Image (cartoon, rainbow, N blue to C red):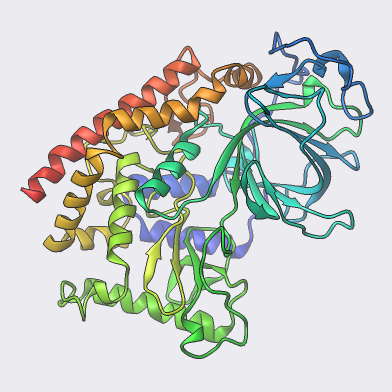
Length: 485
């Protein structure tokens, strides 16, 4: 993996900004160089898979009927077939593929011996800074027309767009942490992307697709980008260089790696517009600097002079409760998206990347009976907000209201069950037949490794998820009741 000068500068800046466990975590992520060995070299074959007496319609140039004619799933099946033999691009350029999607219909499973519901050209490249090193990789998908140009369309019931993320859960052995948490965040009023589970075949040989091309259960996720159905902020053209137009919309990301950073915030990248004009970059940099100064100044509690003049307070209340409840180890320091619409205030979100949330730990241990914002870095925004008794009361009151229904133990468990149910009829078993890591606590064996939940069976992963949230909610009940009381 090649590291540019800008990546190394960003890495150094981030380590200086963070402290303790999280500093070691980010430094560890940035230090990784070589990939974990992908496979033993033995071609994968199913010991068994769902069968319903398939026809021979799969006997075509696309599929090898000997192993796939009867393949079926309770979730959609995505089949990527290369146009030119070779590995998937690991740069930002896209490799060319044909994508066929098979979906369940009329209470019947998706079947590879039926006609696909979607057939389209698609570009594919590996995504992620650390996740690209996992054996089960994640990908960026761009839908195209026959001429290879970007071309949006709806997928799996989600609004039309050309750009998607195909996320392959590796550290997350529940397979649903992102799906569950994004859905929960949206219900709480946070900005979050839509996601759908699927099983994926990735063929890079140019020959018919076989069982050896199966790569497991994935989540197809809307990419974080400006748009009516994605991050709905105003379009900002290069010529919009004066107020009020220059005031929005912006999509930003507190992160590390290549990007256009704010001049005074070496961890905040501008994702949209891309690239920003110099006046736009300077304007949004001032907006964050003014917010930071107001938050950390002596009048920070004053509604007109303090932080409330710069941020949508209720949105931050929802966001903080969400991040603390799911205990996101990346929270506030990585993939921490922010947005500012034209004429509006700074808002957090969309929420993103929760493979390290919901019970996972760092090697040296992680306390789940503390606020994560007190452990997650030194920019201090959340901790300073909590220093305002009025903000803390808002947090406690909102939590008490949410716990009555949406965040009750019963509704949380039902939401987890709903996300996991489609995977219990064979998809999860096939995934862990392909990737035998259920009972491995550290599936990414590096120094300062992540500690994941291990189990003998997939249902035990789901039970562990429920138990973690039950205990975390009980701790938040006790802690926040002291504030409201």
